[in-house]
Length: 180
Image (cartoon, rainbow, N blue to C red; front, side, top):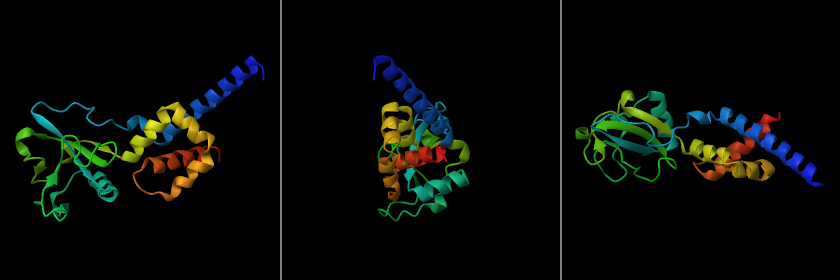
């Protein structure tokens, strides 16, 4: 292949990848995936992250608040409270189902409060799968690898957790559905 043909093929591939990228941004609503701690909080408040499992995360999103009566305190015989940590108790809010919220500094006691976290105190919901998808879709070299080997990444569909592999499966599946 001569140099001009190679350049033309590369541009066609680039345009196709751009189309895939734009489709995935819209499909997964990635423009609304908020980076943790990126939204300013009110003066005198503290930013905390409550981390939980996927089922509880979805219920909290649906309810619009974190309810104290849903806290059992059974895990480590801790007091019944809403737990929060400034950086995420279990790790990065991008890697665990996390609810970001703010409270007046004087209302929390070593990362816990003894009342509901109201909807107006919640800043954002962080779904790790969407953070992984956003990372892969916005970095074209990752997206290109997934698009070039869809069958391999579709094999990750058996993994149903908040893993990077599952995010790659969802991307491959969306690309496959794009052409149906």
